[in-house]
Amino acid sequence: MKSTLDELQAYVAVIDCGSISAAAELLEQTASAVSRALSRLEEKLDVTLLRRTTRRLEITEEGQAFLLQARKIIASVEEAEEQMALRRQKPAGRLRVNAASPFMLHVVVPLVDGFRALYPDIELELNSSDQIIDLLEQRTDVAIRIGPLRDSTLHARPLGSSQRRVLASPAYLQRAGVPETVDALRQHCLIGFTQPESLNLWPLRHAQGDGWMINPSLYASSGETIRQLGLAGNGIVCLSDFMTAADCALGNLVQVCAQDTLESMQPINAVYYRNTALAARITCFIDYLSSHMVR
Image 1: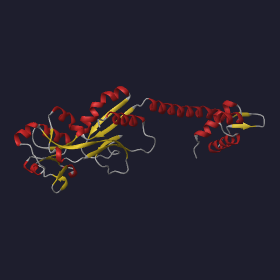
Image 2 (image 1 turned 30 degrees about the horizontal axis):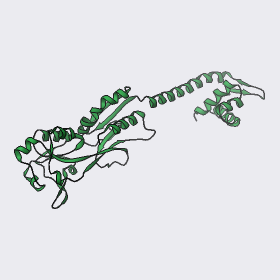
Image 3 (image 1 turned 120 degrees about the vertical axis):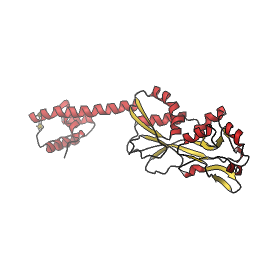
Image 4 (image 1 turned 180 degrees about the horizontal axis):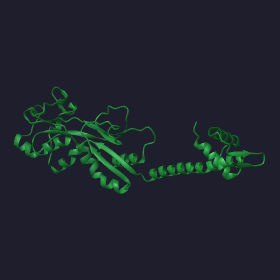
C-alpha cells in the first residue's frame, strides 16, 4: 500500500511544529488523527520515523532521509496545484477545434484575431471536416455541431441557431427566370448535398404540405462548395444564414420563394467530453464564440 499525501503532510508538519498537537492545530485536525496518520505511514514504510516519548519526539536516521523526499513530493504537488490555478486565471495550452468548413470560414476564422488578443497563451489548432468526427479518435477538445445532436455521450452547450433560406445569384435568376412558386423550382437547377439527405429537405410550404424534398441536378458534400456554386450562378441553393448573410447583404445572393419559406432554425452547439472540471481554455473559447456569434 502506498503512502498518501495526507500522511506525508502530517509527518512534515509534526517535524516542523515539534509536536503532534501543534501539527494538528496547523492542519486543522485532531491530534489523534495526526497520530494515526504517522502510525500508518511507518507501517507502510516498515521503518520507525520518529521515536516518541512522553516529553519529546526524536527523528530517526531513516526519518531524516525520508523527510527530504517527503518535502520534495509535497512541494511538487503544491507547484502543480499553483500551475493549474494559474492556467485557470490565464488559460494556456493547445486547443483543438473542429467544425464544418463553412462554419469555420464564416464564423470562427473572423473571431480568431480578437480571441488570440485576449488569450495569447492558447495555441489554436483549427480543423475542418464536413462529416461528424469522433472527438477522442481525432484528439479534438471541442467541436461545433450544426443541426440536431445525436451523440448522447457528449456534453453540449447551445451557441445559437441559424435560419435556412433558398437563394440564388442575380445572374442565375436573370438567365433562368425567377421561380414564382415552389412548384416552379422543378424547372430549375437545384444544388443539393450528397449527405445528409435531410439537408435536401428545403423549408418550403407547398400544396402538399410543409417541407419540400428536392431532386438535385448538382450535388456537393460541402456547404461551402454549394455556396460557391450558387455565387457562380450554377443554380439555386438552400443554406444557413451564418454562411450567406454577407452575400445577401451585398446582393450577391437573393432569396427565392421568400413568401413560402418556413422558419427552419438549425441549432448550433459546441460539444465536448467532460469527465472532470472543464479546462479553462475550452471554457473561454466557447464563451467567446457564444458572445460574438451574430444571432
